[in-house]
Length: 457
Image (cartoon, rainbow, N blue to C red; front, side, top):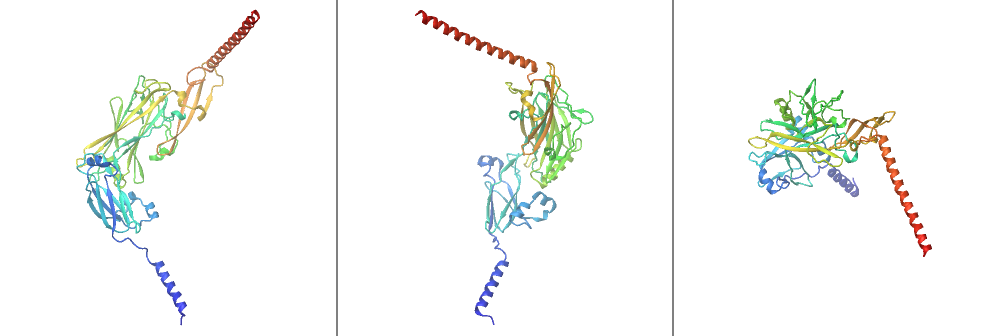
C-alpha cells in the first residue's frame, strides 16, 4: 500500500505529465481581420480608386509560426497546391474598410479584386498574408496601393566617384528597363502589352543579329554602333551578377513565380522602328500568354528589357545644359502601354524619363582604376591607350563590370602633349621668378633712397 506522501507525489507527477502532453490553447472562433484600403492612399485618392471586393482564404497545413511563415511561398502554392487555399468569405469594402470575424488561429491570404467602375485604372492591390495566433487574434491591415509603372537602371562606363552615373563621348551605355504587369482579365488573359523607347539626339543605336537592324542613330554626326565581337549569352537576372559584355541587340525577359524566361523576337514580341528616334516592342499572343501565366501565380511579375546604345563621339548631346565639365545629356523616355484595370480593360499608359550626363573623357575615366599601357616614346603626337575597368552597383545592390578602351593624347584629356604641359609649367615658373626678383630690387632701392635721405638730414 502506498504511503500518503508517495500517493501525493504520484498524483502530482501524473498531473504534470498530462499538462505537458495537452495541446496548447487554441484561438476560439472569435478572431478578426480588419482591412483598410483607404489608409495608405488617403480619402481623396481613394475616392477615385473606389471600393472593391475582398476575398479571404485560409491556407491549410500552415501554422502561424515563424518557421512556417518564413517558408511560405504563395506563387509556388498557387501553382503546385491550389487546393490548400480554402475560401472563407468574400465581402465588399464600405468606405475602403471591411471586417472578417469569427476566425480561428491560422494563416490567411487576402486578395483584393479590381473595381470595374474605378476612375484610376492604373491602381491595384497585391494579395497579402495575415497570421492569427492564440495570443493575437485580431489584426488590422492597410495594404498599399500599387500603380502600373516602369523604371530604368542605366549602366555607364565612367568610373570616377563624381561621375559614376555619367557617360563620355563615344562610350557604351546600357539601359535596363523594368515594367510591372497589370492584373489579368477575369479569364486570366492579357490583351495589350507594349514598351516604347524614345532616344534623344546624341545617341547612337544600331542593333545587330546576322545583319544590322533598327538604326536609331541621332545627332550631328550619327555613328554606327559597333557591337563587341564576342557577346556572352546570359539568361534573366544572372546578367546583373556577371561582368557585362556589350550587347549587340536588346534582350527581353519576364520574371515571376521563381522563373526567368527570355522572350524571342518574332515569336514572343515584335520590334519596329517609329520615326528616327523610337523603337517599340509589342508582345504577341505567345508572349502575353507567358507573362499572364507567371502573373497568375505571382503578382510581382515584371517584364525586363536590356537595351544597348552608345553616346555619340561628337556633339550635340541632348538638350541639357552645357557648362564646365558637362557637355550635355542623353535622355531616354520609356512608355508602357498595357491593360487598364477596370471593366473596359481599355489600354492605359505610364511613362518614365531618364537622364544621363555626358562629361569630358578625362573627368569620366580614372586611370588608376584600370590598366594603362603607354607608347614607349612620348612625343607631341604620342597616344596613350587606357583599358579601364569599372565596377558599378545597380539599384538592387548587385554589382556589374564594364570595360572601356580610351585612346587619347599623352598628357591628359585636354589634348595637350606632355612637352606642351611641361613647357607651360616652365614658362609659369619663370614668370614667378621674374616677379619675385623685381620685388627684391624695389625693396633694396627703397632702402638706399631712405639711407641717402637720412644722411642729407
